[in-house]
Image (cartoon, rainbow, N blue to C red; front, side, top):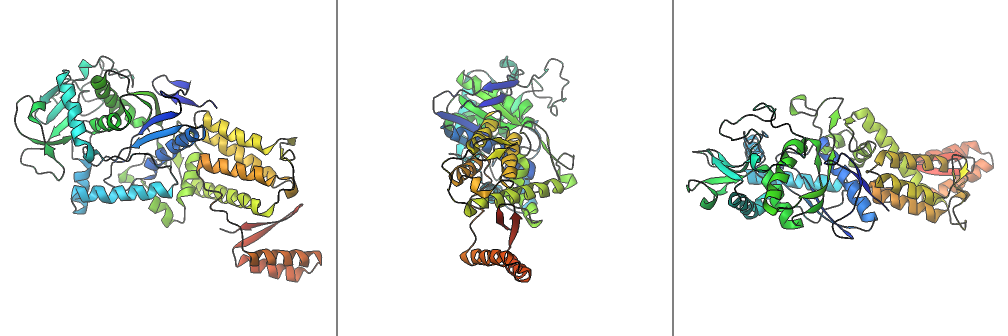
Length: 486
C-alpha cells in the first residue's frame, strides 16, 4: 500500500515514507482546556484519527502525541491579553488548575465518545516546564533571544527561513498587520518564549524564571509561551525530527511557523517531514464564534438527539483540506446515512455462508467480488485521506446488496468489509448492529407463515408486535429483511 498525503510546505501530494521503517512519529496540536471543545475543534481530531487508522492498517506503529495546553495560550496571537486558563478561572470562580482539570476531563470524554484512537501520549504543558525552560536556555546560548519588559522573545531575524513555511512577506508587512504591534519588539513577527508575570499580579500558574535566562539577572515569576510548549514536548517525547505534524490551517502563519523556528534553532535539524492542515468548519456558512453562539459542543448535539457518531459521519463526508459547513439538516442527513448503514450491517445476521466465493455480488451490473470494494475503500483513504470517496464506495455496495438475493452474498466477505469500514472510518457498525432476540425471530417466522397462507390480518398483527420491539420488516424479492427502527 502507498499512502499519499498533501504536504503543506510542498503544496502537493507526496508519497509517505517514514523516517524509520514500520514506525510513525506524529504530533497533533491538542486542546486549550479552558472551555468545552466545539464542533470545529472536534472536526480536526476526526480527520487525524482517519490518518492514524490508515497508518495502522498499513502496519505502522504510530507513536503519537496530542498535547494538552493548560497554560500559556493567550487570547491574542501577539502574546498579549489574558491567559485563556486564567480567564476561564475568573469566569467560573475557580482556580486555573481546577479549570484545566475539569475541561481536560471534558475533552477526554468527548474523545472517547467519538471513537477516536487514543495516542500514546496526552502530555500537559504544565508537566514539562523544565523542558521548556531548557529550550529557552539553549536558544539564549545560541543568540536567538532578547528580553523586553514583559518577557523573553525569539528574534525571528536570526532565523533566515522564518517566513518560508507560511510564505510570509515580512519585508512588506506593516507593523501589526499580522498581529497586534508591541513597540518593544525588534520585529513585528518576534514571539514570546517566556512571559513575565505582570508587576503586582499573582497568577494561579506561574514559575520562577531562572536568572540565567534573563539579561538583567532579576528574579521574576513567569510562564511559558504557547509555541515553546509544543516544541519542548515534541522533542522530549518523539525526538528532534518527527514524521508528521498536524493542525488547523490557522496554525500555519504563527503557531507552526514559530514551532519550526524555535525547534530547528535548538536542534539544527528539520522538525517534521510532513505537515498536514485541516480547513475550517463553518456553521450555517458562518465562522464559529462565541458572539454568534454557534460554537456547538457534542453535548449540544446530544441534547437535540444526535450521537457523536452522527457528527463523525458528517465530518467524514467532507475532505479535510476543504472548508466544511455544519447545519442541523446536514447532521440529520448524516444520521440517516449512518442508521441506514447499521441496518445493512445487520444483514450479516440474516445470511449464511452457502457460497464458496463472493463472485456473485453485483456492482453496476458487473460481477465484482466484495473484496474489490474492500480494497477500494482502503485505496480512497490512502489517497490523501479521501473519506468522501470511501463513503461513496460504501453507499454503492450497500445499495446493490439490497437489490440482490441474500443467498448471493458471501457472509464472511461481508463481515470482512464491515471490519474494514469500522477500522478505517470508526463508525462502529458491528458493535451497534446486534442480532435480534429469539422471540423476534420466531415472530418473523410466524409472520412469513401467515403471509404464505394469505392471512393478512395475522400478518399485520405480527408486524405490529415486532414494531413494539423497534423492529421493522422490509419485504424484498428475495425475502424479508428485518431492520431496527432507531
